[in-house]
Length: 138
Image (cartoon, rainbow, N blue to C red; front, side, top):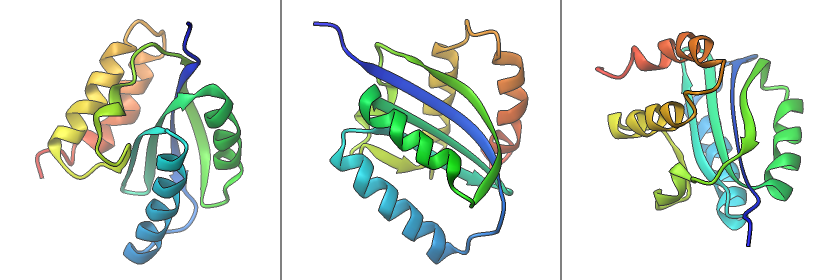
């Protein structure tokens, strides 16, 4: 039986700064929905930029992504990947959906990007990821 797994990866710019409580509320709401719907992935916010990766059943992540695109808390959305996948890289996360908190989490992002390296957008992706990776050693 063929799976219907898809992955979506995007970057965007925040439109308004969220304080720690707002970020936690956003994460709790998102992770609750995503965990209930077998959506895996990560969410990263650094220096006014967002990076999110979603993995799961296409029938679930497509409408979710459509809502995300319309969300007024961010702008300048750059979709890196929106494609079928056989390998759910973030499935191993205990909460299924996580905020990036450790260098191991950044390594998982790099593994995800490397697994999609054949894509022609890799050079631009590397440039877009640079602001996130500069915080890696901190």
